[in-house]
Structure formats: structure tokens, C-alpha cells
Length: 125
Image (cartoon, rainbow, N blue to C red; front, side, top):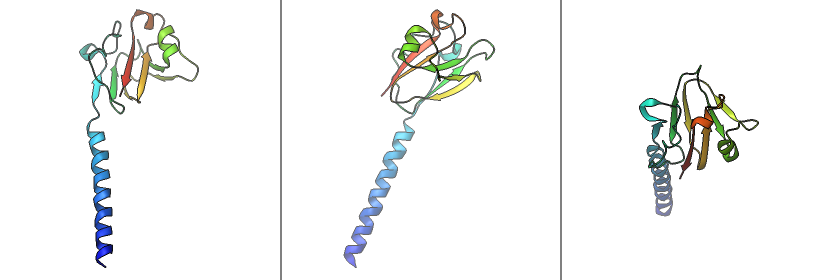
């Protein structure tokens, strides 16, 4: 009987520990407004410098939806300012995108916008 109680208490403690660890990971997620007060616009490529991003952080892209968009691209799409087949295109003007672990690349694919610095590369730990 005592052995069963100890086992149940150990199991309860383990479940509680797992919940606390999971909650602390979620609590660390941050939200960043791309480009700061100026929003998602030209010459924003340097905006990520000096910031530390983590998987699960959210990037908020604020822009005029008739003037810009946000496209999640791969490295080649970022470097060449091209939209790969099947790339996710965001057009709301208030897009919120969760970062995945590793490199994350975003461009505006309106003509000449990416070439004018409307692109960012963010690496999330």
C-alpha cells in the first residue's frame, strides 16, 4: 500500500515538473514588430541585428496591404528575391508569423521591393 502511494506521488511530481517546463518555454516567447514603429517597409533588412530570436517568437508585419505583402521563402528565395513555388504569401497588412527553429526568411514580392531592402533573415534558437 505504501509503495503504491510513493509511486503515485512520484508520478504526480513528474507530471507537475513537465507542465512547469512546458509553461516556462511558452512564457519565454516574445513578439517583435518588424521594422519597429516604421513597420514592414523598404531598407528593413538590417532590423534583426542585435536581437535574439527563439523558436515560437512571433514577428508582426505591419504594412499597407495595397502596397506590400510578406512572403515566407527559403534561402535561395531570399538571396535572389524570388518567390519559390508553394511559398506562403501573407497579405493582411497585420500579419503575425511564428518563427521556427533555425533560419527564417521573408521578402516582399512586389516588383523591386525585395531588391530595395524589403527582406529580412532571422535565425531562431
